[in-house]
Length: 345
Ligand SMILES: [Zn+2]
Ligand SMILES: [Zn+2]
Image 1 (cartoon, helix red, strand yellow):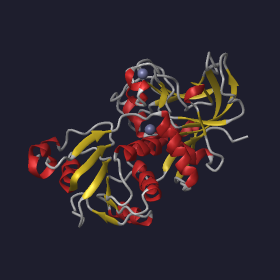
Image 2 (cartoon, rainbow, N blue to C red):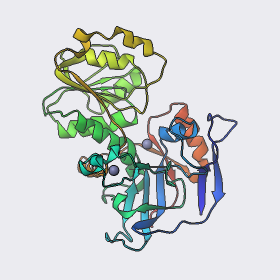
Image 3 (spheres, rainbow, N blue to C red):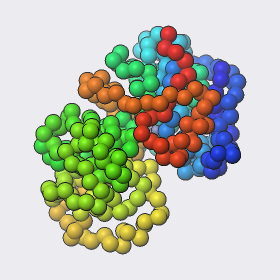
Image 4 (cartoon, rainbow, N blue to C red):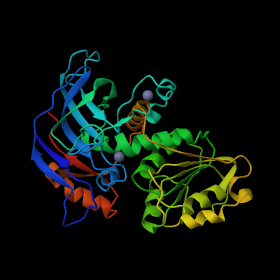
């Protein structure tokens, strides 16, 4: 089969394409695993984080890709779910131990043995991949192959962030940063909390306009202040200034949920302005989002079919994966980039 694989880690640039197109053996499903013929795989910023060493794969070469849609072609021994012939998705969660205290309390995303698709196990930048059947998600018929891929990452993690907001209908929500996840979260929040005013903070005027088009009640610059205090804010920026700005805008009892793999060092000094009275007092809380659970993925797919949510996607052939990654790095995020690997039969 054909696969685009990572062979070495380092900065991604024009002159040095990070992935190599190769002909490798088609894997076979082991105990409890299924083999998928991949139809499509989303391209995520996390692939850059892997290649540039911020979340490095433990062994090389590795096939990246963790927003995979395909049809199950065969199953290994001990499979019980009868998935052969079904269209399924694979998300960032490839497996978790199922036995530790985090797994047993619905927080398998925090499992010490968490394995990530396309980093700790081969992912979907290939014509076939295997996955434990218990970690394959059936895709609702309403959702197309390409449209499903961003739901498996940006959508699922957005769903998790929204859950951690513990919002009640009518409470005010803020989104600071408005990228791939923000677009989907805005539409999910609009559906789940019809009476909640939604505020979007974004640096670019184009993003603010887009937020209003998608149903936001208010859109402003990162440091603008809306009229009312916010009950919850989801921050998806790589910086610290929006964190302080959001904490200051929280209403008493407000929740800030940071949905970012890391914060950049650039404006770390801003934290020197942290003021107990303005930013923390009155039971404000701060949490972060790490990975996803199968529940987050299932919830997102169900919601997307119900709304219906149709993410904008730009298809690329498998062999153009390097170009897609370079464009992600350049920050052209409007519309998810998706490798279209095989036609849906
Ligand atoms: Zn991702
Ligand atoms: Zn575990």
